[in-house]
Image (cartoon, rainbow, N blue to C red; front, top):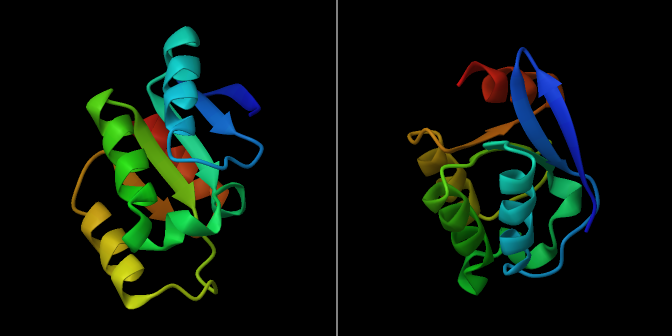
Length: 117
């Protein structure tokens, strides 16, 4: 797994730049964030495996919850043209209510949100 560090307006942001395969990969992501002294993570939907989008697998819930447990804010860039299941869309709407995970249609908006908090 390859991660990259960037800074936006003084905020250290780790970006996942290659696909992950398992929900447990989140532990490596968390370790990288801690090593880089970054509490923000940016990822694009293309770097997530299909099980992430199927809530029955528990992948998305486990991934997001572990990041929240370590107080790592997650911004996802998920193109709106993607066809998600009703349950996954509900999951994304619920995420909008929290402070730790948001989904954006473009990278620029995701970076602004990460840098703001």
